[in-house]
Amino acid sequence: MNMVCKFSGIDCAVCALKLEEKIKKLDGVISCNINFLAERVDLEVENKDVFEKIVEICRDFEEGVTLKRIK
Image 1: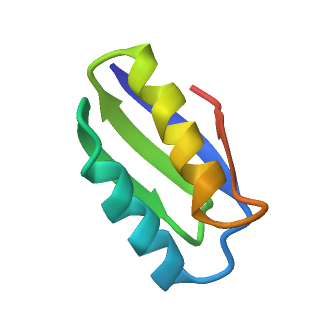
Image 2: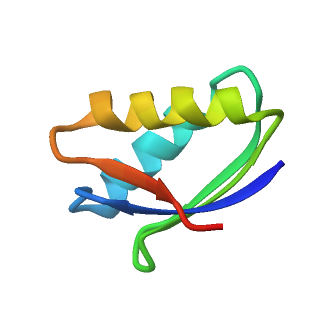
């Protein structure tokens, strides 16, 4: 299942890379690519349940980080 998401609350590219690495380690994530400048996350996951776990990871990563599915 492919998804395109918009994120906010990350203020540096290094933090975005760290978040991307955390998401990639999650079971059920096939691929994850965070584009810091575009505030975009391209995901390929096994099912919708994995997306909810990714949202939790983003919330816990840093105060104010949000992730919203746009496609």
